[in-house]
Image (cartoon, rainbow, N blue to C red):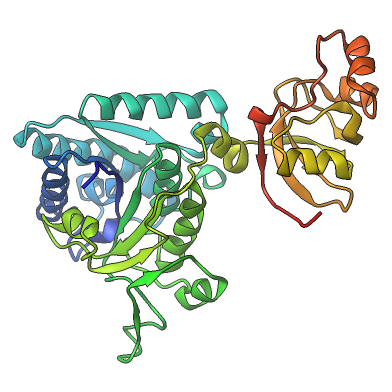
Length: 373
């Protein structure tokens, strides 16, 4: 079997006891599963919840706190305790674990996004096990991922994982709630995530974690376009990841499980994380050149410019119908583009004093929608 790169996401419900406290027994099982697959030459990145579960009792809470301040205080204590447990367990197997705490801002800022990617890549190169969690002790609501399901999807995309494995306390997806309907049918394989599936999944989830099946399906929907296949299911102890790669995992497989075209990390940042500073409207000829011919956007194809932005800022590109068709980093400011819109390349170069006036280079462009011309 070729070497695989796997992101293993472990939720709070798969790391805790009945009272919500961290279970070292479950933690050891997850570590054993990772060790087993690494011995076969595969790479594993662990996205682990559990900081709040690990820390609340140390602060005297009788159960998992419900206030934001309580959760963040518990996470501040628990993140260290959680990593201490992981470090000790991996060390028993001669492996080094590394901690990365990420927030939405780390993905939105292009430099920080690139730094996170470089760090994880170097850790994998050194045979370490990156352990990623959201920085729960400082994140504010509008800057959170909502849960580690989405975080794991975004991580699996930018490190070009082959498979995202989301471990939960339910053995896959069903056509109705299996706790309420004994005749619920399990999906063993799905090619993609549909709106109907999202409706069925609803909001049901564990009382311990922040996500549910709908959250996991939304994460899968995010990961699939990045060329990442997804597995959602229960742990089977040390053989969890071995079973997954062998097609025998206790859960649901989502995706083609064939080699797919991978979106480069830089274009993932453009498509998903970047902040838009303005819009450029283009004509049919420019739309065809951008979307179907792999060309850059030239001033001659621009019909209007809106918003205030500078060089390297991200803008949306809209067609004559007003539909957003993609995003790109503008080579020029909104002032310069307004000046040269509709001009030939030679005329535009004279105005902005450039050898070749390119509004958006094809390497700084990503398509978001395709329409029939």
